[in-house]
Length: 635
Image (cartoon, rainbow, N blue to C red; front, side, top):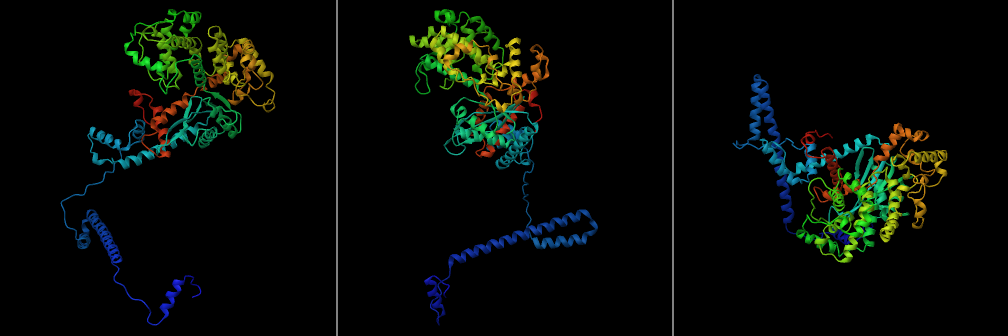
């Protein structure tokens, strides 16, 4: 009694101990009775089902024995009689439909469905129609959404595992990591998130590591995401360089992703800022300085007017550089040189059509001749972020200025922009992808901009102020790229080699931190362009480049006239020439993520497997030629 703490329970117990215990029986619990009845019914049905299955087994056994030995007829008859008594199943003429067991989905078919963005439901229709087209019975194949969905999930996972294993087996000597971010909708819900494609490149190798989502686009988040991907693929010790857009979140001095990631890796890394991004920043500044037409939202009024008036323009009547005194004076002394460059580059293949159109417009404006007829493309998109598109629009409007109403301010702005693009910008943009030529190109670009002050002082100074903040390829290490540049004279290469060898014995730890970019003030440009460049930019830290990529420096002791025959020099030239100094690699995978962000699956893990599978399929089958498509799909 003392152990009971609840008073009501104590009172109940005392009443139960009295004679003639207080209380009475209530009526029947109907709900409980019904519940127990249902339970009993289920148990009976289960017992009957088990008996039926067991008896069916006896019957099958009897039939098998009958086939084996006809002499055991008595034994068989006994079993059959017992089975018939136990089963007592009524005969029926209806046959049970067999379940389809044959799988049709293969690794290649699964990857193809992913590449073509075919959903599981659409795959059922497509595969069923294909089975009928080759005169097979669809009932023989397991074609349903669940089976296809599960098989595709397994194939993606296995394919990704194989891709990763093969890549790790390559055992790269070095790796350059690329990344770029893009704000996209989340897989579930209406929120937005940053997606960060992380790509590794090396000599003749490119591999997507992953496209993680970020809670924010800060340098810390980016560096952590890139580090995690590198760790997952076992590449932490291999990384020798970063390729990135020069945004504050990437290149910030204290909290930029590059600095933070370098600290996480615990070693000095080469910073290879995207050269296309650098030159887009310069062109953007020039548009602003030229007092280009103000924009309202995503539309630029001048471009919008031009698009609306395009159908009224006679494409056979256009103006060229000689029709205006300003353009003639600025371009007269460089016209032949630029025209020759543009015509040669038009023979190349371009990753984007707007690059080709850009060059064609320059050739047309300078009075050159294109192969075939002159055709002007319909004006396309001109999003504020696409400075290449703005350059194309400017040239195109200037060509048809006599058929399109322009204010004097608009016409002057177009002339300034077009002349700058043709004289200073085009060549440096189209050679931006070449790592070996990058240092000399930057030196020549500074000289060209300084000289352009004679044509347009404000435009030249604006471009110079922007560019001197991005001299990444004149840093201690990157300037060494120029030792492989054929434009550097033999005598300059001799002086560069002597300067490197003089300081070769110094320990790297004693010479301080390697600068990530060259620092130059606007007032120091006149003295800078008078220096012996690139020789004067070589320091005792420049030789670090060869150590980084395991390039032997024995060739530096030879006369430069023999370098082209030296194996180590050729190896170094191949490695440096293969470096990606534009971030097009990461941008392609941004596009890949955009394409498949809302397709096929909303599971994050499967989304990563999907991206790997699609990238791998596109690499194996880059076109639709019969020869390409006839190649076997190898995991």
